Image 1: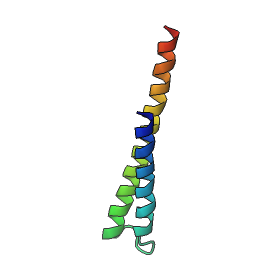
Image 2: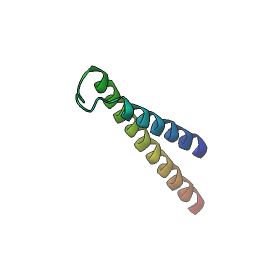
Image 3: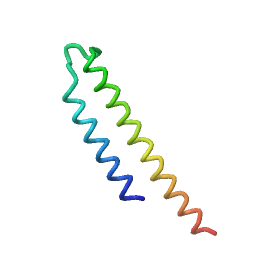
Length: 67
């Protein structure tokens, strides 16, 4: 599970970097740039959710060790 979350984080980071190159900085809210901005936001949300999942798994293992 740990490796899987890291792989998904790397893929999301790659999508963020790719979409940063697709933004037209002269018109950032144009048609093509809007899709890139939404995808960047989705990638950031994915990374955040995966980080929360990793932290919750660490907490779960520490709680199980105490029992």
